Amino acid sequence: MDQEADMERAPKLRLDTFCVFVLLVLGLVISIISWGYGFGRLGRPGPGLYPFFIGVAIAVFSLVILISELRSDTSRSFLDKEGAKTLVFMTLTFCLWIVAMPLLGYVVVTLLATYAFCKVMKLEGWWKPLAVSGGTTLFIYLLFDYWLYIDLPRGILG
Image (cartoon, rainbow, N blue to C red):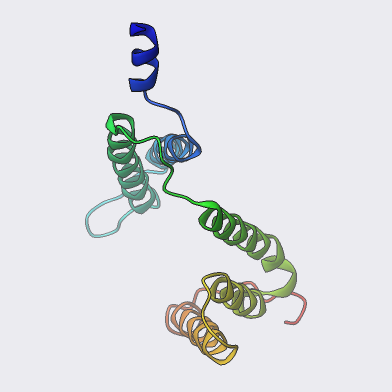
């Protein structure tokens, strides 16, 4: 009987816990790789400065979440069936965004991906998602291409 009680109290590994562990490892890998790029100086930061601190932040936050999940008594997942479906669609949309970017260019792909994100998050109608995706695409295009002079992928549409 004691073994059964111990089994019930033992932390159950769920998909949530696995994903947080993957994020922890990803944060550590980002930090280690960016360490090699160098931090630069205070007046001229190097290419590894920002990714290093982002990787550290991902690792620290993931570690905090992982510890709280392992200490938790509940075996309930934070994702229900609908939440898991939303996560899968968001991930697929993001992956398609990455794959289609060189082919179709930033503007077209970001407009379509942001519209898809809005529909997956159940933004009503077609006008609101179109306004959000158009505004987001325009703002980021102006910020990077026009103000910061960073070329975004043009794709086959030029």
